[in-house]
Length: 236
Image 1 (cartoon, rainbow, N blue to C red):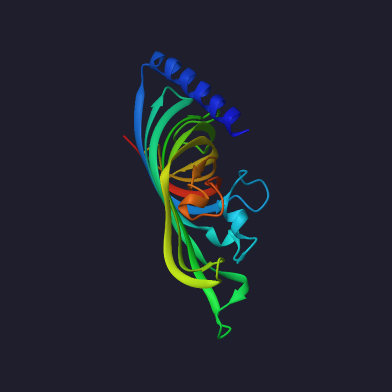
Image 2 (image 1 turned 90 degrees about the vertical axis):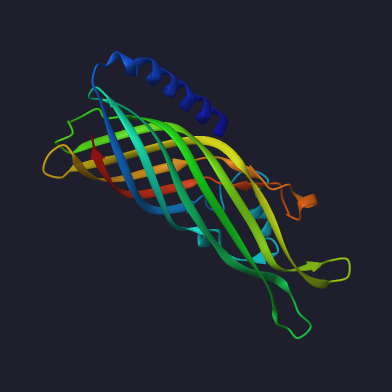
C-alpha cells in the first residue's frame, strides 16, 4: 500500500512540475505553524514494528506518542490552481514503560523510556480548485517526505539468561521515504496577503531499527500517522 501511494505521489509531482512552468505568474509564500501528530495505532502498523512487539512484554500505550509538532514551508503558486512547496517539520516525544510480569527482588518496577524523534523534509503539490487568495480557499495535495528519525529505548532491561537487570540505551537512526497526503482550508485576513490555515496531513513510512543484533525486539519502527495543523501564511 505504501509503495502504491509513493508511486502515485511521484507521478503527481512529476506532472505538476511539467505543467507549472506553463503559467506566467508565480507568487511565493511563507507558511509556518504547528499542531499535533497522532501516530498510527495498534492496528495497521507496519509488519515487524518494534512498538507492537514491545507491547508483549512492556506496559505502555502507543497513543502516548501523540504530541505537538512544528513546521515551516516555502510555497510557489503557478497561476490560480497549482502550488508547489517544500518544507520541514519537527516532532519529538516519548513515553515511560515497565516490564509487564517482572520485578526487582524488592518487587519494585523495572522501568524504561521509549522516545521517537522525526524530522520530515517534504516536497508536495497543492491543488486549489475554488476561490482566490482574497476568499476562503479549500485545497488538497500529495507529495513525498524524507523522514529523518531517531528512536531510543533507555533504562533498565532484563538479561533473560540469568534474569539479572542492567542499564543501557539502544538507539536506531536513519531516513525513510514515504507518501504525504493533505487537505485543508485557507481563511484570508483582510485581503490576499495574509491568511490563517487549518490542515490535515497523513504521512507514511517506516524506519529500520537493526532488530535483535542492535538490541531491539523487532526490525522496524512505523513512522506513519496523522497531523492536524494550524498555520499562518504570508504571500509575496
